Image 1 (cartoon, rainbow, N blue to C red):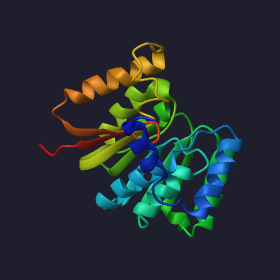
Image 2: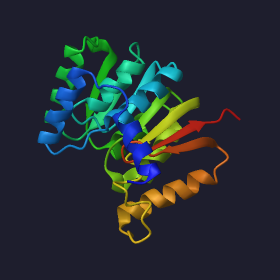
Image 3: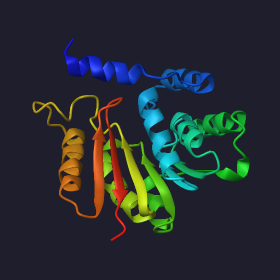
Image 4: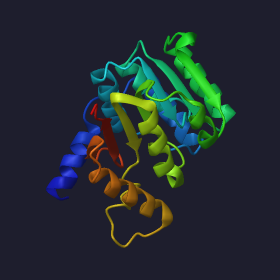
Amino acid sequence: MSEKEANWRFAEEFGEERDDIAQLRRHSLELGVDPVSPAMGAQIAVIAASTAATNIIEIGTGVGVSGLYLFSGAPHATLTSIDIETDYQQSARKAFMDAAVPANRIRLITGRARDVLPRMNEQSYDVVLVDADPQSVIEYVEHGLRLVRPGGTVLVTHALWRGRVADPAQRDDTVAGFRTLLKEIASSDAVISALSPVGDGVLQLTKLAW
């Protein structure tokens, strides 16, 4: 194992996941839904906390793993979460309620993100989490940057797409989309960005105020 691989593994295994999130993770995997890794979840929780987020939008509810991490960092936030799967959202709602998240801080919208996002208010969110349909990641990030306030952050999970983005031999459409996104963000003067290798990558984009 190389030094970088050892560092990645150590970072990935650092800390302990809450029992309720670990149980929900197992349920997610049983359904074939790929949740954020524990280290990835911890990182988005830190971003939510450091942003002092009170209004969060999530593209891709799943069964609530990422949502619980967001609430762990911003327990007083209101979460709007979009997904096309009603059954998954019902599982997420139960998980949020079991975690004592007040019902008035949970807004689950069932529908296609590309249909819902244009109706959301611009510059109204502290954090936007993109965790759905990797083929549409560029479109979702464009919406996220429109919706997030100056000083707010757009988070893109799975940004290294299972190790394929870093492999020049991989050239499928999903990988090409992530590479295009990373290239465009690197040259943008509208955001400050960082790419973390935890899980299979978290891209962090903070919208600058100027």
